[in-house]
Each structure stands twice: as structure tokens, then as C-alpha cells.
Length: 285
Image 1 (cartoon, rainbow, N blue to C red):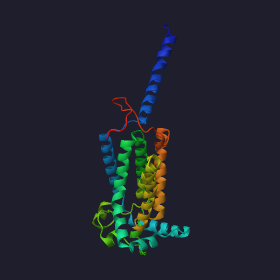
Image 2: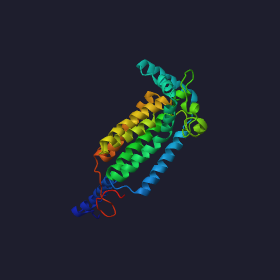
Image 3: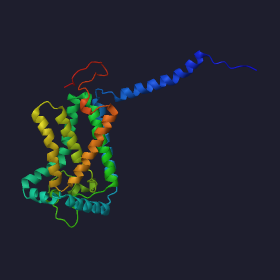
Image 4: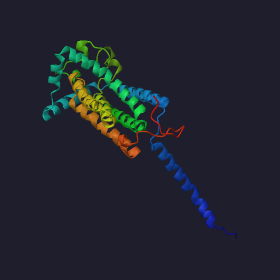
């Protein structure tokens, strides 16, 4: 009978391949997690597709009116129990000042998108090394919010029955908001929890506060989410607790970025080498 002989050289060759594959896998993971200079065309495409997908899923969630109204009643009772149920008073007080509430209506309809895109552009140009991680935190925040819309339908205060909240968009006939008027059928009216107006504005505010060098810009960074909180309550689009939900979603988003990059987004290097030239240069103007 013949014998099978395994040499030491053969054993070494047999173990080399798995080790090499493991090293290649670690190298690929390191490359994926390493800060890199973002590509403009990819970022525009990614943001456009991501927001389209988010809107599609959010609006595809069944508008469970009865459950949403029941949950709104529960939130309202809970806030009364906690002593923070001041939304109705704030709504009426601000609505009595016509120029102020009209300005808030336009604020609610526009700055949510304008400021967020502006901060993303600023990050891309001035902090390319931190851009991808900060963007990941924002995207993860938005993604987890979809779970809230699906599992906890919630009517905004302006749609509650048995209360005297003022739908300020309808009363003052302002344009641009998908929450009321002719555009309300384009948006899920019962996706108030969590508030992404708070999630996004707080992301913007923290980003500007952490990275801006001008003191006035850092102050504006802190004021922006505070002003947004006032607006969403004054216009009867959200409860205070919706804002808490938005904050929790943002905390989750930053945790995802922290776990992926191994540090907080704002601690990453401001500038990174250009993958084409290998040179570390400020973003092109």
C-alpha cells in the first residue's frame, strides 16, 4: 500500500492562503473605514437617492389615523402628567402675532432642507476628512426615524380632535409646507414621532458648534436647534416629546458613526490625502 506524506513545506502552504485572505479582508475594512476625500458626483447622487428613498418609505407607511390619534391623546396626557403640556398655549400666543407665525411657517417649510444641505456643503469643502463620518451620522439618524414612523404613528397636535390647536399654515394660507393645505396629500400626516426637524437641526447645530472657528457661527449653531424647537411647537406640528425622539435618533446616528470610524466624527483629521494625487490639500474652491 502507498503512503501519503505531508511535508512541513506543504503544511505551510496550506495555512498561508487563509491567512492571506484574512489580511486582505482586514485591509479592505481599514480602507472602507479610513477618512477619504469625498467625490462630488458621488455625494450628490448619494444624497439625492437617499432622500428620495427616505421620502418614499416614509410616505409608504400606512396612515393609521385611529392609532395616530390615540397615540397623540396618550402623549398629550403624559405631558400634562409631566407638567410640560404648554404646546397649546404657545401655539395660541405665537399665532396672535401674524408676522411672527407667518415667518415660522416659512421657517418650518424651508430651513429644514436649506440649512442641512448648506452644512453638508460646508463640511465637504472645509472639512473633507470629517465629512463622510458626519454624513453617516445624519443618514443613520434619518434611517432609524423610519422605524418610529412605522411602529408608532402619531398625529401632530394640529390634527388632534377635541382640542383647540391652530393649524397655522391653513389659517394664514402660507405656501411650501407639506403638512397642510394642497400639499398635505404628498406627505404622511401621521409621521410626527420622531421629529426630524429636531434631529437634523441638532445635527447641524452640533456640527457648526464643534467645527466653526468664528464665535458668532458657533453661537448660531446652538441657537438654530433651539429656534427650530420653538417653531415646531408654535406651528402645532409637533409635541415636545417628538423632539426628544429626534434627539434619541441623533444619538443613535452618532453612535453608528463612532463604531464605524473608531472615533467621533469631529475628532477625525480635517484634511485627508487626495486619492488621485496623494497630496493633502484644502478642498478646492
